[in-house]
Structure formats: C-alpha cells, structure tokens
Length: 114
Length: 116
Image (cartoon, rainbow over all chains, first blue to last red; front, side, top):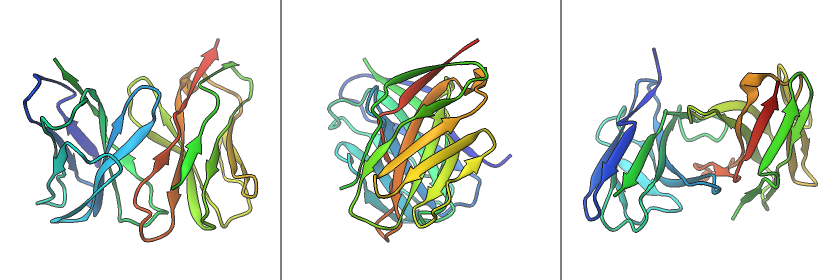
C-alpha cells in the first residue's frame, strides 16, 4: 500500500530535550511538508522540501529543524528552543511543488511536553 | 499574505439533510487553488474537493459541491444527503499557483455534527 507513515503516534518529552518525529512516504513524491496543528488554529507550515538535500522554512520554523537525505524520508526535530512544542504534527507529501497537486497527509504525531 | 476565514466554529445537520459550510479568503492574486479537507476523529486529513480559480464551473464530487464566488472571495462547501460518517472537522485551504505557492494556508476549521 502506498502512503505516508508517521511515528510514533504519541510522543512525550521532558522540557529541554530534543525529539525527532519520523515521516516516511512510498509514493515517490518529490515534495514533503511538516505542519503543526493547535486547537482552534488550523494547520500551520513549519518546513517544506521540494527535493532531496533541499528544504525551506515555513511560517513557524523557529525551534524546529529538518533534513532530507532521502527522497522518502523527511524527519522533523523539535528542539529545546521551541517554546511551546505541545501540538499535533502532520506530515504531507505531493508529487511535486505544483499547486494543482494534492497534498497527501500522514496520520500525525501527538507531541506532549511534560 | 493570504488569509482564510471560516466563521462557523461548529455546525449541525440532520442525517439526510443538506448543510453548507462557509469560507472566505483574502488574496491579491488572480490564479490560485482552493481546497476543502476533512479531518475525522482519526485526525487523518482527507481531501474532499478542489477548485481551480480560473475555472468558472463549480467543482462537484458526489455529494459534495462548492459555491465558488471569485469576486466575493467566497468558497462554501455544500454537503447533500448528510451521512453519519460526514461528522468531522472541515478545513478550507488556499494555495497560490505562483512559484512560491508551496504551502497550504488553512482556515481554523468548522466542526460538523450529524444528528441521526
């Protein structure tokens, strides 16, 4: 089955710790995205990548980092610099960056800072 | 910057009836794409319907249709013959067709309840 997987589903972190969220796709998509979802605020773009070894900041990149070493993988690291990291994180991918192409979403990771 | 507004935080509809969810957006661009996404309790985002701004004809997908009013910058979603499985959060989203149009700009969502 083609799709996007995110792991883990739930993640708990102590304050001051970095944590990495996994996102893998087997759709052969070039573009990948990370969004954050908070209650009452919809989804906001953190980072996106159009191609391997290249990525750009979205609207709320501060306190986050990413890498794109492989086409199918786009992990997101939430660093200790992120002041309010508790949120639901969604990864998405699309065939390429063309606006007409649908973005497919993964099932998400719920991060809670204790 | 583009903004998307969904003014109805919650809506309710009787099973088999029709409901319309509102969405307005602000942009200075003439070419763009609009989307409605559904987020059920599983929280997986699912594309419901898509509209290209250059097309005058309203998009339709089975029981889902849109009323796209470009001049008014309005993009409402109509769900006909509502079913229990339609209960979810619905998000309206905008995407520019320009080279910088990589991101989706989302509204804050409308929670739809379906009464049996």
